[in-house]
Amino acid sequence: MDRTNDRTSRGQYSMRFKLIHKQSNEVVDTVDVIKTSEQIATELFRQRKQLDDKTFRKLYEVKEDDGNRPTRI
View 1 (cartoon, rainbow, N blue to C red):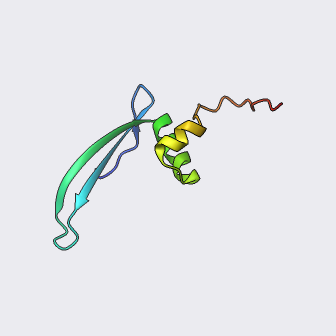
View 2: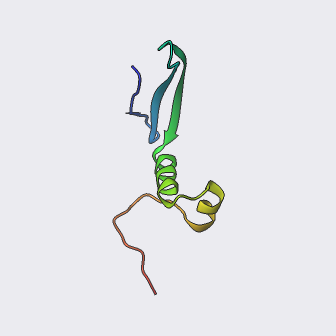
């Protein structure tokens, strides 16, 4: 299986990727990546804001949406 989105018991997602040489179409390597849903969300938000990791973390925090809107003063 080239890619799975199987959720583990700790809210993590496991994905498998393969590296393919374009000329020979040969699989050179494979890697399994396990990330939490929070890590995935953080990466997506950071890319949307087009910020490097250090700047993004200085300006924002990512939390699971509980349905409540933050109060503004």
